[in-house]
Length: 338
Ligand SMILES: C[S@@+](CC[C@H](N)C(=O)[O-])C[C@H]1O[C@@H](n2cnc3c(N)ncnc32)[C@H](O)[C@@H]1O
Image (cartoon, rainbow, N blue to C red; front, side, top):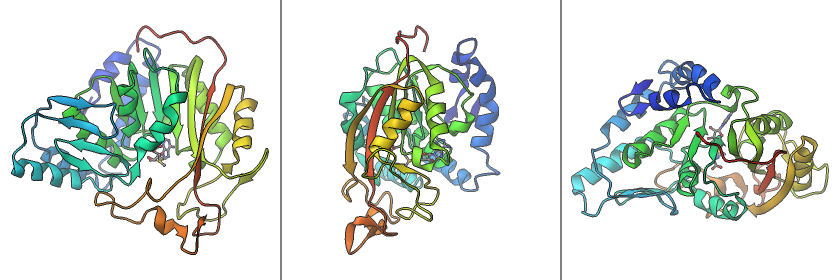
């Protein structure tokens, strides 16, 4: 199922035929066409041209387990080719999640997503032999890190087509067969799949109108004993405390519920998750989320109260993010055919 010269989902659909993901494989062609529809997404042709404009370069080394995910070659590349690479990648602005480095070009993204990865890594059950789902994966930065950490197969889903094209720009050079980023939201994942060993949902829960339903959907994606890694905005407070910003939150629309850590853990337990643990709480700093040449729009510093950086511009507590892990009941067994 080729959507473009550099975007081919055929091998994934073939791989899923006849297995526990066959239902999804059957729905994928329609989902892919809708998720990358030129009629729906007016900027998509420009992004696809950028993908087309990427120079042909052969990587000598692939970097998946370092902060800057990317590819490199031993011999320096021609400055004109380097410029062509930079120009094409720049056409995929804004680059939000990263960093990446391709043949010496450092894509200094809005977020230091590697910091989040470093905060969660110790709490992760080993990814070897695991099929992993990353819900709301953005450009797929963490998906690459999951592959670098040994995952057997990584599936990222994100409904924003620019991020999908950014992923394929990386994939043109990294050429990894076990990582896929699908232009889809959690709504497109068939119900009660129970097909993933580890499921990540990072930066998504607060965008869901019904957070409990989101947690249930994540649970339904997991195989028995599988691990959930959840990261979301939280507030300080005890059991039951939850903030529902009426308008925007840190300039973001579509923010529904920010629980306290105690509330979040109680939600998970109430849904039947086991081993619910708080791994980390970090107030987001303007070093971690900031404008850069690769994301020139406003960023966190513009979303905080200039008189009191402890408050968002709307007067709510400034962004604070928690990572929790939990398991679904059951004894996890490695899957033979990811
Ligand atoms: C704050 S970003 C988080 C990106 C990445 N997971 C991280 O932690 O850095 C939220 C992402 O969720 C995606 N998203 C929005 N609605 C979604 C949905 N219904 N299902 C899956 N992803 C969604 C957005 O496109 C965006 O890329």
